[in-house]
Length: 281
Image 1 (tube, helix red, strand yellow):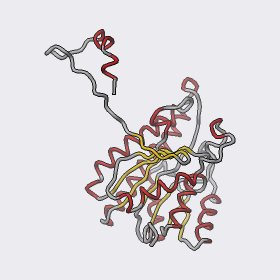
Image 2: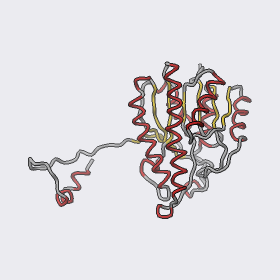
Image 3: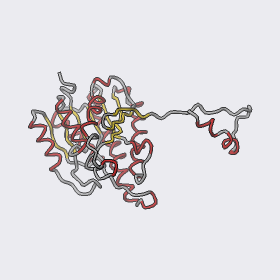
Image 4: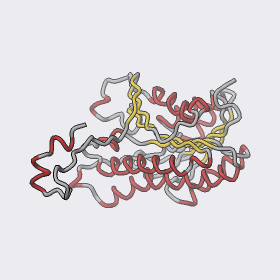
């Protein structure tokens, strides 16, 4: 028995790269897949149905089930339509992988408001809207579900020239944590991936020149694990994948330092004097 037999999975941004790899693997493992892709360029402009259609044909050609959807994740109407596509085609939805994304990189001082808004709208707002529409349907079905979000190493530790992207991906981390807490009562697990891979969005970056060992296909098994019953009740985690390396991101508190006197109000000079003890892990 395949890991996702009988499941219906929505994968956003599934026309290329990591999303396409997710869709093909999920279908191979028995899922019926909603292949969502607006079909725009990597900066989010334009639209084209051919990318999603090609993935659907590839899945069907291998004996799987899939349906294309071309709506934008960045509007409530689009998010609702993505979920409705799954229900109309397959009768239900069980898994949501929020993968859709764009890049509009620019150094912080040169970042334009429109570039900031566009990236936040697709990544962070899109994850929120699609998740909310999906959860409303999943809770009505009443049998639990799984959500896999896509954050980024940029969002966890920052990256030069990606203030908009890093802020959006850091927001997705916070959203993942909050959703994982709130949705436990509905038996919905919410986890995230922080992938590093050479894709259409990243192939021209210096770190990927001449690199063939960090592919989209390295990422998808982690998504499959989080979307399957193998994940159990694990929720609120961030798995990072970089080629053969798999690791987790965690936000941790340092031990900190208590003020020596009973009053307990620090002044700025005391913080400076005890800085090393305050930040020591």
